[in-house]
Image (cartoon, rainbow, N blue to C red; front, side, top):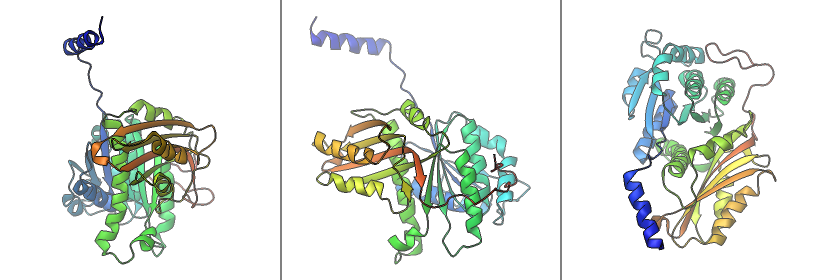
Length: 349
């Protein structure tokens, strides 16, 4: 039997008994004003292979957002007028809409939940949304933005919201708005916040492309599940870097030193590292990027790596990594015994 006849037999078998292609349902959800604004911008940036949902208590703002599905929380509680900066109202509004949210997350494999912390709807409702997504069986990757330093009264509230989000998230990414003052202080306000949204878009695209596009060395949904099994209540984070193939060390540094993230990677127990490059990507440069990132993690970390070759990436390398078991370098939670945020979760459990 020749190799050609083997290939022909395999092709004929495939035609007669086609294998079903696995479908991954990925939802990107914006909760509250800041979360919905980020979702709206992601749609304009053209993030692919996602199902978008905008969730808010503010009817007027929700109406202005571009998303495939919109859910107005609270009904008669808020009458579409927002949560008034009160997280307990946002949480209660989400509970009143629980059935609609459960329906929206049915069959979801991965849910990105984006929210600004410190206000009413994002702080109060986002943990409930993350909880419902988790109960539906989804891997929950949450993106929370923290307040500016001058929003003094919102900072303790934001920390409580982040602590609540952490309980229901497989991966929690906290982005500090204050870093915008260092990175884009002279940009117009809308463009400055667009920088943050671009970072979020790159992270989400990195994950969705890794799982939905064919690769030379493939990473699948089961790999993602495996990596998050190492979390054991610890933090996880997502890294993204891109640059010239001639400077792989710089790509590593850019990925590990994202100015919006203050994270210690040395204790990471597991990670997915996926690189994308052009047809001339060398084994040496690929290894430099993967090894450079993996070297920051625990010596016995479980590393799953993947690689994709795309002609349009000629001369460049993109790397996406999910690291499990990292430690935040900034305090994310209130000190001492936490009070219960009504309608959300008991933070002392």
